[in-house]
Image 1 (cartoon, rainbow, N blue to C red):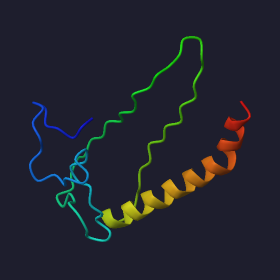
Image 2: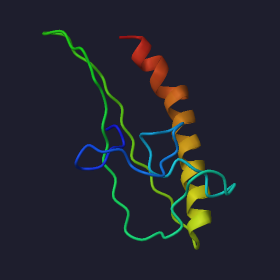
Image 3: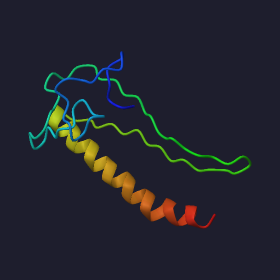
Image 4: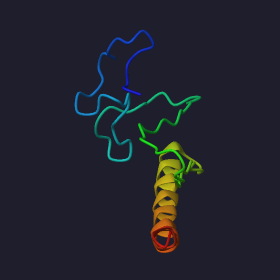
Length: 101
């Protein structure tokens, strides 16, 4: 995932500081490049690369979060609140458990 078009060409108008993101702006503060059209958005999760050794086990934790509200902006605020709560939960409960392994 390098933020390129399907044919491998560079997206025109993409922020050079964040070339892997089409809309790296913040709609709440109205800064950067944002999607003002809304609509049916799709996501794809891409992680890695990893170097894994044979016979070794690994733990991966992935979260997909959504926000719900009466407006798009409130949905973003709801999503951020949920993300903070999940991060707090992970740091409080999961990190100590994972360190015991």
